Image 1 (cartoon, rainbow, N blue to C red):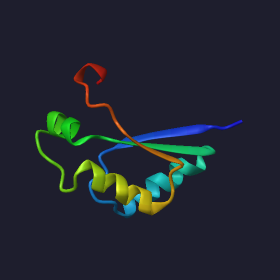
Image 2 (image 1 turned 45 degrees about the horizontal axis):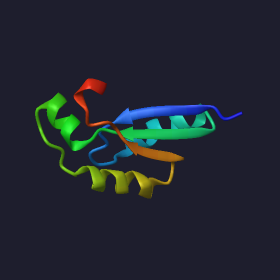
Image 3 (image 1 turned 120 degrees about the horizontal axis):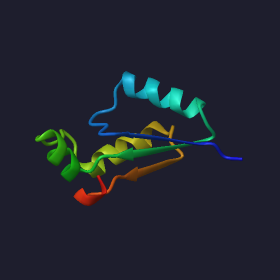
Length: 80
């Protein structure tokens, strides 16, 4: 049986703290899913823009090769 672990974040530049957290999350289950905040959500919640756009942040996480799935979060305010 798969035990899925879900983590959320902006991941605007991947650093060792992110890597450590993601490794720990991966150890908690058999399937790691990362959801990154979209540019619009970051702007709405933080009032600022990211250094890297959604596509770049997604690509950076894929390069880490730790997640089984990487998704972009919902842009609709009603859902958050």
